Image (tube, one colour):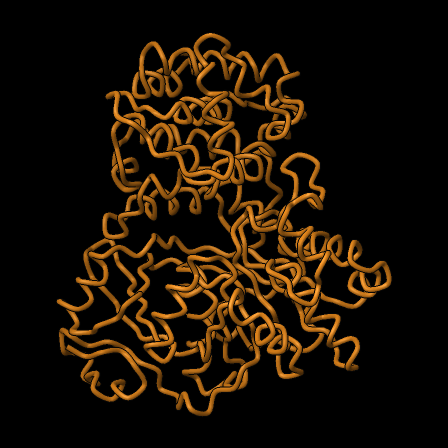
Length: 501
């Protein structure tokens, strides 16, 4: 067994024909210097941005763009400790549908700071002139904006605490803005803030949110941030399930590598990045990143087809008794429903996407979801629905209503979420709801049978959809069917030739 760290990299076999072969960095990690600070080091960042950078470093480039990870949440301490013990190395395992595993040690991270215990070190690292990009994967809910109005929430207790004591912040907003303020005071050009989260116009949203925080802290600082700091938009894509104990054991047994926190992912990966980096950017285009002038067409394609389709399969699938995404997408009934949503409701809201055949993209999504090696849990896809549905699916419903398009399947997805939020599946087993709004959502869902519109009367999440008779009718019809007939029979009605329940 080889414990993963710098010293033991040389013990990994160089024989690609060896069944225990694990690819490793071809560059000298001692020569790496930091150029990027990344906030929110989870599985996706390590399977995506850090992987692309490692690939570039393997070409002998970007050695001055090493990543310094930053954790801001209490649970990030475990990740920080695990990676520090491995010299910030970790194994990325690509799992192919045919059972082939492709392991690779990623070496692009050079440090990891835990902000609650190292606040000053985090701020000073970002204030260092060598740092030219601060990137983010803080989840859809990490941008602290109202799901309907889009306004920054200044009443958030952590935000209020940061504004009261801006030199000792705890939020990503406070940390980044304090570092920018120091750079401004020291005459150092501002770094670029690069969002890698699944939000439409993620760079634009980040600019509004960080700008609102800076404005509340100091009007002059806020105006400077809006004028001087770049926030490029990006579309990111790679299915990356939560690392399980079995993944750790499998890596050890199949490849002889002891890694406390490897990452597993699918073969597919995509990154479309707006070309807006005043202080420069690694040559990501050399490793497959699409660097473009306008990200929006790609971004909407992914959010409204892939991300919204995940929501379309997960609640129905869970209620029907499935627990993994690949199980759902190996069932022809669910596939028909998903393709119907994508073709009839999601796609009509999209502009043409340069270089992309949308029918091929839709079919590829089904193949990706059906990969049995990934074992992406429906529980993961069901989590934090209150951050996801309003951002990924509600815009489709609104646009389709405005242009007279089909909304029956989209309304059904909302109804399946409402039914799931009741907290009990069709076998009477409890459902563990994971959502920042768990308490109020489950309380409202408890009224589903007595008052079918209770869930969608929540204007904080759905805005004025309750005022649309067409949406309400489709939603109530599906919710009633879910209660009376169950998820499978409801889907059968939705995919029938008449499209009725």
